[in-house]
Length: 462
Ligand code: ARG
Image (tube, rainbow, N blue to C red; front, side):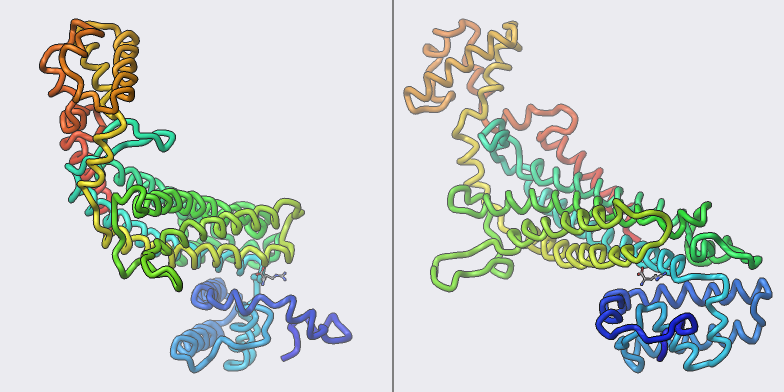
């Protein structure tokens, strides 16, 4: 089929240039949104008497036929059309003739594509949100099984203070909750800016009803400046940044899973169904899924950087550069669709090894703060108590023993405040169960966090 702008041109577009110009092979995934947008546009044109009632119903019938043919496979998404918008318009005209040529009245591909990508992404936000909820559920369930599993808590990757495995992994559930909320928030803002009716950039002379189209396409409001309507892609950037932050969280979790499943830590064992072997080393069980999620994080950051860079020098309004918005957005979405469910299954199936965690927590003087707190509670200023506890740690490293191995006589040499109850105070389990401050690792505090997470999951599960 000749180009729709053929009137202005003497010769056809060069084949190579045509292929280069075309976005059909990547934007055809928006066919559903393109058709819903066109159906609503035809309704508006009909209601406002810009086209006749018969033309309106022929267009709508034609479009729904195209939709069902695409879905059944009768109309394959293969074409040398420039993009999905032209493909559907050309197909419609092929099917219904002249009324098809009236669909594009009071519209431009500039506002059409800005509409389609918003609708496509809004739908994806819901899907991704659902995947995040499942992952949060897997983490919360694992946490519930491990409220008493003591492990070392780290700072600088040095053993710091005792915590529980539940307390540790719930951290990721809270991060993911914020990711969920960030995406929902970006979606809300995106759906408050319906661009359709902005036309090429300067609106239209027809008496259109932009609010009708917006409302019936699921938007809460319209974009109030027609140039902004077709030029804005910040909603793509907002989502790509939310996705990048989400991937950063998964990457940190991946890194820990990789460490924990090494022989050096051996805090967990990943299920066979989520690990791989080596082609040469028979003993290997590799955490490939976690490594791939960590690796793919760079790819999603790349998508964000690519689009930021594409947009940074563009004058208003639409520029063809903006066709480059879709591939990074789709790539990031596809990556999230792959990563989140695999990650959830990997977490859900992993075996926690409590003895190893406990053994690690009993070495490294994780109770040194508690030893200082003991003296403080007996009246000593914290800074002095801190110093004495430090001296005791030094003594232990000399003697190659733990704080609880020191005799009362040895302890009393440094402070007369030490009494037999010190041993109970610095016992690992005491150290954890006494950390009752809000948000801490004590069982009742962990239960509070789990309950909060379960309320969040229930509130967002439809
Ligand atoms: N395929 C184009 C895109 O994705 C659609 C808009 C084309 N508009 C134009 N004036 N050439 O951006």
